[in-house]
Length: 91
Image (cartoon, helix red, strand yellow):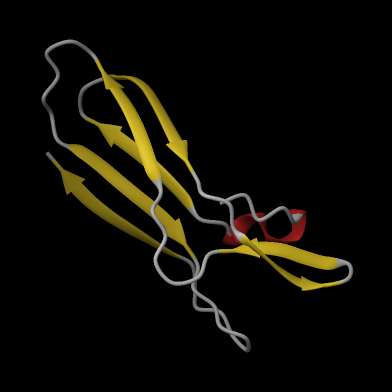
């Protein structure tokens, strides 16, 4: 999720996909975020549920599980939680 605000790049959502085998290509497609903020402090956010898609090309014969890691930071109008990384292994 490109937040489109240089000061907030550490808070943007980032999805990464890794494998014990070599991945030929990984392309993550982020939906557009909702524009928030005031005058000089504009940025983009995700609200509620968001589908982030990833296209993965594996080497021929690779059937190792994939590890998907999502770096995110949850906030409301008054405060933000500490950034977190959620990891999930998928077949």
